[in-house]
Amino acid sequence: MTAPVPAALGNPAKQHFIGGAWHPSVSGETLDTWNPATGTVLATLARGGPEDIDRAVASARRAFEGPWSRFTPNQRMMLLMRAAEVLESNYDELAMLESMDMGAPHARVLGMKGSLVQLVQYFGSQAVNWTGTTIPNSLKGSFTTLTLKAPVGVVGGIIPWNAPLLSMWWIMGGALATGCTAVIKPAEDASLTTLRTAELLMEAGVPEGVINVVTGYGTEAGAALAAHMDVDRIAFTGSTQTGREIIRASAGNMKRIQVELGGKSPDIVFADADLDRAVPGAAMGVFTNSGQICSAGTRVFVQRGIQEAFLEAMAAYTKTIRVGDPFDSETQLGPLVSERQLERVMGYVESGHQEGARLSAGGHRVGGALAQGYFMEPTIFGGVTNDMTIAREEIFGPVASVIPFDTEEEALRLANDTSYGLAGAVWTSSLGTATRMIHGMKAGKLWVNAYGLADPAVGFSGYKQSGYGMKGGRDHIEAFLYEKSVYINNL
Ligand code: NAI
Ligand code: MG
Image (cartoon, rainbow, N blue to C red; front, side, top):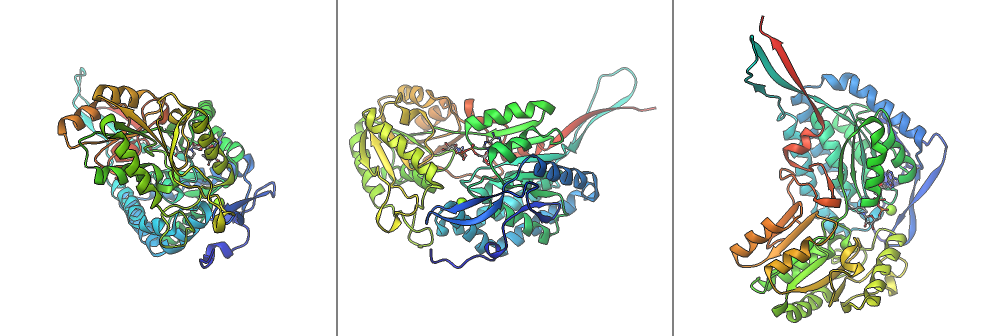
């Protein structure tokens, strides 16, 4: 496409970032990362394996035991504040890399600058904000009892491709705030912003070895990181299937763990909702980032009285959504991340047809000038029942299933009839309805008359097979810490 090439792309083959320097894979092997808008190779990455993970973990361990352990909370806070500044001043390049690597519209990624900077600043604020406690005891004799917090050590982070610029920070931020070190394994489809961020962090003053990045495939580099006996904690965002494998692999040394997995989130629209807000809200709740968001509201439940009108309005709105070149400032949806993902999603569209759902909008790959990329029309199926495959499985593409309901009880029963429980929303003008629904919905993050927004100070975690371990808020920081209880004899 027409965008200028970021400086970071002009470097030779992208390598692992270990101990503050670039290293090729021990095996010498590489893999290609693609630009999904053009279907062409964007850069060549090092293909990491167990030996590279060994090196990175050893580097992280040395840093953890070394000078990094003597940084004060205030120094770690200031480091994160400087990191926020460095990211802000290099954001145009990062946004360019992110769009080229995973296809998100450039204007949208540029719009996320404030969220990224705030996320990093939030972690900065947390560096001086964790404490132990003193506890009055009832022991015989005189004892002081207290708890001490200490960083868990080396943290492994395995992140997906759908929003790496933000995803990596849930691990890097927690590690830097608490005095842990990290080895990050970005997704093979979109590793470039993670590599560039690690390099930029050195400019901000992060000591070498504190943040390391090993690129490569999940079954090779990822699996080696999840199983590594000298990694103390693992954080993962991605599919439920891979999450299960990571949990199994972590058992060897009892790693602490946080997993944010798939979703099939309900977005419930009552007849008394303000439809001028609910229609675009529900549409963008599923189509944003071309549907590649774990908390996407993919099951749109609509009260029967307004079903036809709603479906018509949602289809009309959807037809106005501009799919196109990520570097065209008018573009709202870019391509899917890869040919594999496009095929997966088109497979679900096919299954929707076969199981008797009715297409209301979209349903096709985009051809013409965009035929070389992995573009797809935002798609709505009406007449969906909750037992159809498209209503049960995470599609991770721009496909909405509209399902009718009559009563609050029925809406709740259908919304909760899923193996997932990541997020959900309700659109209504009745406070009573909204309150009853948010009490009844079994999901970790809920919105009323809104969809998709998030603040790092407001932690959340999934229900059921959407994973566990808090992301955001105080508990997120606690997860990077051990707690020791201490008994001091007051002799
Ligand atoms: P994935 O969950 O397999 O990949 C996510 C990350 O895990 C990548 O960095 C990958 O390299 C790594 N990984 C893969 N296998 C691994 C293993 N055995 N051990 C350690 N790490 C491993 O997801 P993938 O294949 O990219 O996408 C497939 C589907 O997963 C999507 O269609 C979507 O349904 C779901 N997904 C959900 C995400 C979410 O945020 N909920 C994010 C990405 C994918
Ligand atoms: Mg790519």
